[in-house]
Length: 239
Image 1 (spheres, rainbow, N blue to C red):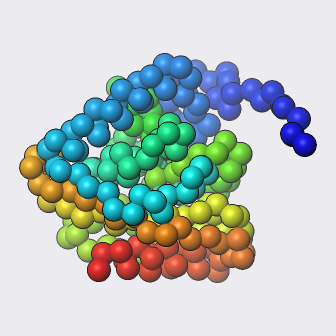
Image 2 (image 1 turned 30 degrees about the horizontal axis):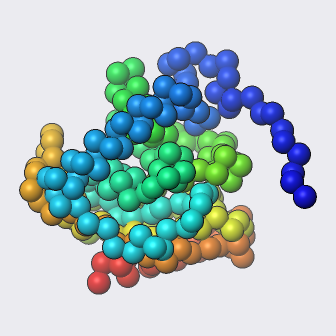
């Protein structure tokens, strides 16, 4: 039998425009959907034309959201590469987790991050348990895709750091898949110290089989278990 249809108010209802941009409950609306669709087309064209972007293992992506994509992180191109691999509902519902102090620092940058990139802010050193609970709830209830870099920051050397346990807080004890990915060439194409990307450096993405953590407890030990398993699966794709 079909479930009863329920009307739910928008999660960002009543927020002022500036608050809505930085809200973890932000919903795109028609304007946001249109801007994001145009941005995605432009990004795909750029990556294909200037970096010969290739995707391997696209068949490993779950057929429908929700799921979480995790990857090594050395460049601003990383989130663009992961989102460019998505199609259909997954592409429209994808949210990159972005550093709030960098991507939501002022109104203009926040508007670009919110409406074009469809990013959600993560405030480094200021994130609260309630914020992660909001993200966890939205992931499951709204059928979203999160693009997440569990190292916490871009690698300057190219070496991948250990995954932090925030990933576990999002998916431990659920059937939500975690898709490990490996990005090759992004650091050379746009290193952390450069102001803009460097064209004609090759870029590729390798997508591995999804992981599930329904048996992982919602405890610090369970979160660490998820983080370590995700890290191992991600590193294995670099070989």
